[in-house]
Amino acid sequence: MKKLLLICIVALSVSAKAQEKSILIGTDFPIQYTVGGNLEYHNFSTQLQFGALTSPYDGIILDIIESFGADENLIEIVRKAYEKGFVFSLKQNYHFQNNLYAGVYLQYLSLNATETPLDIIDVYYPEIDLTSFWAGGSFPILREKRFGDEVTEIRLKTNLLQAGVLVGYKFQIPNSRYEIRAELSASKHIYSSNEFSSQTPYPELLYQQLEQDIAETYKQYAYIPSLNVYFVIKL
Image (tube, rainbow, N blue to C red; front, side, top):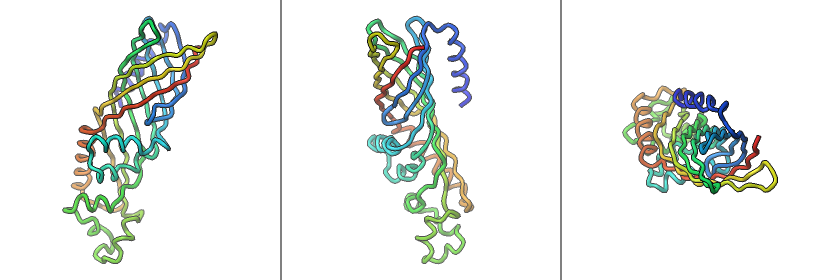
């Protein structure tokens, strides 16, 4: 995150030299609804975007990751974390003479803390008996009920950093300061962090195993393609 902040400071420092400034609103499908600003200087531009990951995009990213081969049970463990979150993007583009441009970008996804499905965790890690850590866990009659209990639940907050490439085209609206931009992009995971919490004192071994398996899944399978469309206003 510190590196991202440093990059933002560098990006903002070039604004004084920008030949053209613009703001944008749009969507990166299937990642976020977004607003941002763009600074152009010579044949280059720097773009900062902030956005929200929410419905109907909340499950599509994980479906894509699963399609690349990720374990479906592990995907279900993190799925609820993808219901809401925010996204920060930094893009550096090169513009050709015919309204075509290409670039590279970093994208940081911070996803809300939410409960994980304990029944799936219980199946995925059979060597760790979750019920043994519950009050009354030795009574099988309480097993199903306590899987959905606030006291026994494990909450997960996850963060992803993706790096990608893009190609785009600018459609100028005649006799106006408006344009439409369309992009195709694809990113690859480069970093993740996961935080776990619970009112029940589960063993640290469980959290370490979850962190390792989730991080390895992102590392191997977190390829996220997107179609981006923006309405741009030149300032």
